[in-house]
Image 1: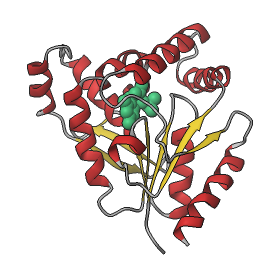
Image 2: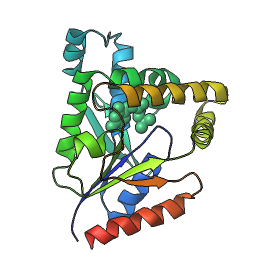
Image 3: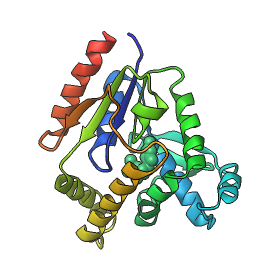
Length: 225
Ligand code: DC
């Protein structure tokens, strides 16, 4: 079977990672959540009080960072590791969510992450989700999908996800975080979020996980088979 690169881009909380993971499982491909890499870098910067507005500090800090994904047999998913520590939990918490868009707008941070992401696609057979995967990381990918969902539905989805971990979370907090990340992600200078010209749009506001998987699998199989 032919191996291809599949990219999924879109705003936060529109279900990209879930879909990308399911798709990778079905095709026996590697799944990479590129947002987790920006989140791990943000966690490192927060822990070490790195001022990301200062280029020299950023460049020196990036030299201290090793990122990798390791399969977790309990969850059946790959966890993000920062310098050999499993950081899957703290990278999903509010301090990281509140700062990750600002950190990921820094040119040097993007160059660092993008170089590693491109290496991961060397052998193809990969599904990667993010904001600039179809435009910057893999502009020649065989299948590019731009995932969209109604903003109110996205807030609700993210709220449910966060409430499971932190019952004190407020809907307003989640809504503000999503709105501010949407704005920064789509207005930054380097690789802003935008749909690649050759990407197919998928609006999953009214689709179940199974339905969206079925649609995307059809698109993929048309190219692979
Ligand atoms: O997908 P996510 O919400 O976990 O991503 C977290 C942040 O990382 C998001 O607000 C923007 C940034 N990001 C990015 O700039 N480029 C990517 N390819 C993936 C994520």
